[in-house]
Length: 92
Image (cartoon, rainbow, N blue to C red):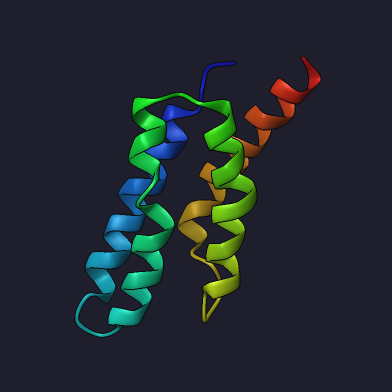
């Protein structure tokens, strides 16, 4: 299985759309979204398994704990793809 570049790109795309949608009405939510996404370009440049694990286990959990409402459903498919990749790598 290849490094989940498409999942990371989708996280960025969908997160930027959420930020654009909330920019006027909820700037605090935009800060939470931006904080969630800001390290993802590094994963696109450097396919590091350690960084991916850190994102999934630490940064994603921090995002989930900071959400004032239900976490954005737009991230679920990407998170499932990353989880499947990490599970497959763990079995090797």
